Length: 359
Length: 136
Ligand SMILES: [Fe+2]
Ligand SMILES: [Fe+2]
Image (cartoon, rainbow over all chains, first blue to last red; front, side):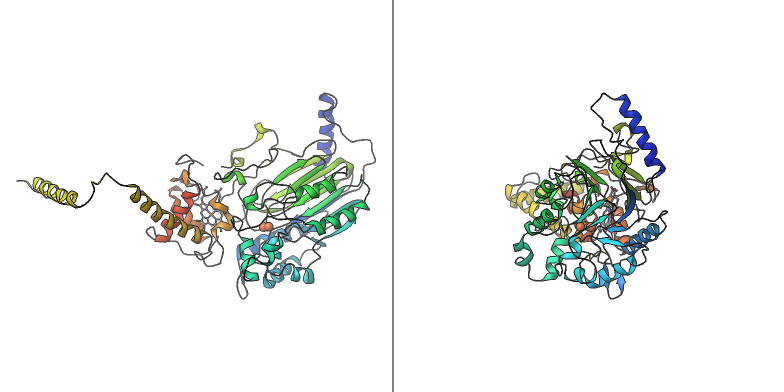
């Protein structure tokens, strides 16, 4: 068995092969036979929202979420190759918040790849982040997979530079999710040009993983579950055989497939968000294929939060494990040759459970 | 004359005196409607402000951080049974739960104007949804 591919991944693969035999030819095409490709695992922690109350006081609830994720990732066996932090380390972009978050994350025993979120950015436009944490966009290669990190939470220059009297006010405005004075996220042309150049060097059959904070597709604009120029990014990703976009920001299990691109969002460590279908005053829609996470129980502080791990199973596909605290964990798999990702347990509508119904 | 009848007579005289100076109790004008709506809207707007303010608790956390547009507050399902409280409770009990726990604050009294304001905003964001008391 390949390292990094757990027994369930393997068994599921075998099951898919059996299922393929039973289906009309052409519906399922399983990419066996090719060289298996390298397999590995990395972890995903996101949306810690470390919040300073005053001086050395921070919101304990959110500290505890991040600490729990760090502890559990350190217990992973085998160890993940690295951890992705998906953005929103801070709540209001303050140095104190970023420092406090880094202090908790420094206990991780594996390297971290950093993605910036809007809560980290809109106080000083990423200045402290770049000094202390990471560049805002970059790429790297790992065991034959090309990774690209994007800063997807930029917005119109007027909103950023002319609209607000102070940097603090700008940060406050961007921090409010349901803000009618908000502004949509964007990757913007300069970064798109960089992305185009970066991808020009990559062979089209290379597995591509794109890490962004916001979804690189459009879900619900009023909450910025949205990237305004997502189609331009998708166009650059289109020539590749298999693309995986991993994102935070939405604080929930959410997945989608557009052509060759799979999108998977992970939970926050801080708090869960409702699905947009829970707000009935505006038209809204969530990708049909997503099996919702359970409605949270307000009496359990960590319910609806957690972290994720991702198995890159060579050319067999990608498995996303959702470690949902206070709930059974879930696995959503995109097997190569399958058109869409699917949850191991709940994908069949008949298998859904009552708490997955949101209203 | 019994005390009952006397009360009735007094009430009748009062009513007659009143109709002489203002409209009948069951008649109201468009201006009245506008006035009442303005009164409601201002309480609702106050609720919207509180909901987004972080001043209800002690840790600067605000309701909208977890309930954008007051979603997942489900006012239409109250009163309902809450397992952890062990009985049927009202919307305001859950508002207070969230003030005391995620916001580490002290609960509001039932007649606190801030409680009415929060309820007004929460219901407003859920207008049009059919009432389903008891639903989970
Ligand atoms: Fe977030
Ligand atoms: Fe975010």
